[in-house]
Length: 510
Image 1 (cartoon, rainbow, N blue to C red):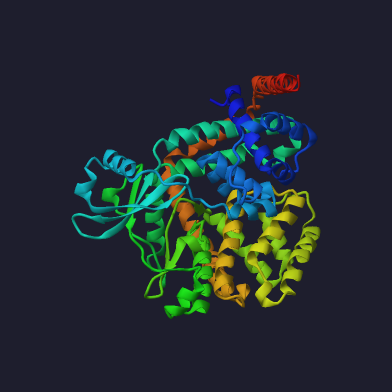
Image 2: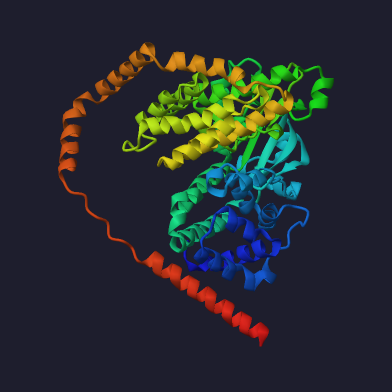
């Protein structure tokens, strides 16, 4: 339920933000107006003593989210992919949020496995270790399959995690509604949509069958990619709360000394990791959206191995073509074409001036091309591009924000391997290959053939569908009645909070 009973959870959250010093940082990042700041302080300051202290060694916001528990940690990770909401500085701070929590007992994990798979753990695994990694949603154990002797990784959800997340997500929705009520200007950031995006990501991660499916689809897409490998999903020993995959051995991609000692070519690795990501995003439209060093290893044969498929990005084919044309236009420094692509895609309102927009894009691109090759960043280019398009009325597109964030992470991984890498030079062949395949006469003929197949399939129903569409078009739209209760409940909640704070203050002072 997303009603006023969530006020207590918000009080606890506000108290912890105040006690850890994170409240001011959050309000500043959101550029919160006065009414929202007052409401936030009412939620936090009088009840500061109820908040958790957290770890003083951490930055304030990270400290607060870690103290508040798994749902808040995960929310912080998701917000680190949304610099459009919290700003670049806060997003950067949240990226260092360590998704590490104390593990739950191995016996509890075995109980979960037995309940999910319907067999005693000893019949499935001849060995089952203590936790080797513990995160906000699940933890991982190293095990050996009894029938084959193969070493595997077994991911197990935390007991009761679904119910705990459901409660916190309800409180997040309540807070988002309050923010939109108190700060109409905040609606451009679409707080409720941000929570809906968070809910979708988390609900996917709470069903490990979906992560298994994502890993399986990713493997099918990339099976022919040279120098890239994924651990195999063991479907027979996986379910909603348990996921079993092959165990991966290799050198962490972030350990340059170990890579050098193993004889791996870091320049080649840096180029490969960037080109792999661009291929997955452009060619497949399905990419690993958490490609940091902690989720990448290098096998003894030099293959890059990726794992942890809880956060995956998806881009439809049309958006991929638009994205590729934009990138290619910048590579060619054809700013008018980049502007035209934005208008053709409907990203920028048609009443804006295309030439003026092209000049704004030139102001984005030229300084970047004037940089030394080692300082050029495609991630920064996309960030600047989003700033310009926002000024020209483009709405936030979540899938492109996730792409831009992942691009920044992948660039960081690549540059950590080879600081002198030329991003444009490495990216250009991938983008050009996609352009040749997806844009031009051959691609147009392929699209027409697909359209003809769809029309043929719906042929017998076309007259009925056209008639129904024309009837709908001729009828005026009914204006939905506005529900006054969210506003009334919101103001009632604020009144209760202010009253409680006043009574408490009077009691303490009296």
